[in-house]
Image (cartoon, rainbow, N blue to C red; front, side, top):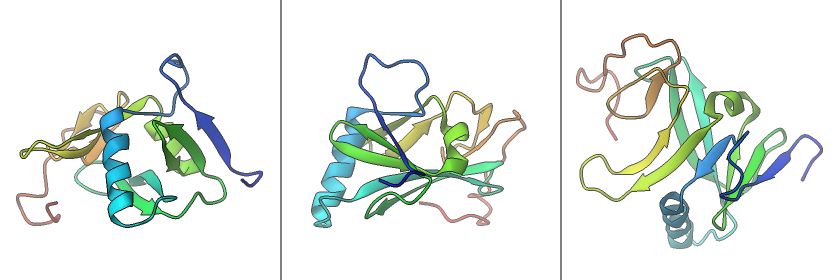
Length: 143
């Protein structure tokens, strides 16, 4: 770990000052994904991309070999989630969940700071402005 990287170990008793809570279903799904890819040491990157998607921000996730300089590592339920420095404040207090539902399933981020969200759950605004989905118009790809 570099001097620019920090680690946060989360347990259920830590309620205050959490960047991101990872629920068990999300951790289990990420474990399944990295096992399927034969990447047992991989970490899950969660970040916020500004001026992207249907709202002011868009969530992005990816599987990476490890943290980069400046990342915050969150260890929860046997996995490591990394968050870049620019995304920490925007994700503060959020929860990463997973649902295997056929309709609207997948990873979801519940962000208490989001004042409005796109129906897809990938884009959000902190200002509360109305978000109009660009998926129906074909301007954004559907997942």
